[in-house]
Image 1 (spheres, helix red, strand yellow):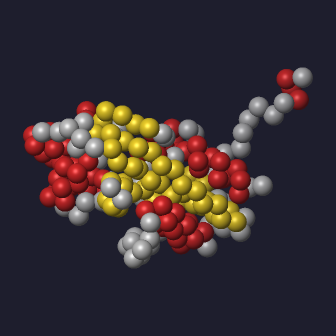
Image 2: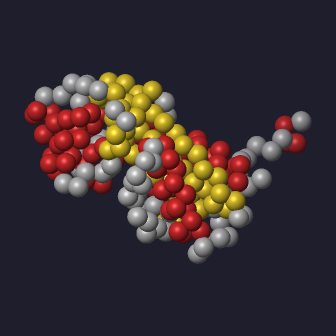
Image 3: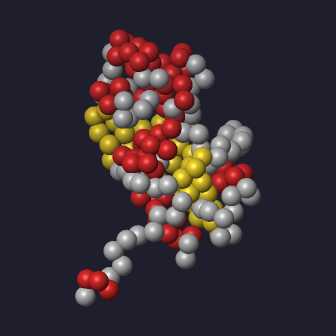
Length: 196
């Protein structure tokens, strides 16, 4: 009988260990209640570390940095990076660095990796999401436009898929939300796994 079926799912209130406005927007868009706590973590790459190891390690370190103060609720942390030809492309240090990054991405496929960690009930669940993105070939004027108008400095790979960069993206293979900054389906699965 319909009345005997549980029709609601549980989205427990989270602590988002991130200052990213895009991650907050994604959680808000699915109706997930949360508060922010910004962790203080060194984001340097360790010598010999693969991009996959890097984003998962950073996500776990961010979650652990906050969990001690919020052990009554699940703590969610994530770290996103862009990888092209095996090279980690983080956030640009200035506009010249953003121009260099966008020039590398123009006309090429690259990979967006996000490590996600959820700490709750003394458990830690860590996962990773990978999405491939293809930029169209770009003229110097188009690269300059994206650098000047795309607000690149706080974004991995110097672009936001949901903003001006959308003009130049020819294809996405995988989770779109991962490219925005938070693979929300993976978050849901990790939170559910950790609550069991």
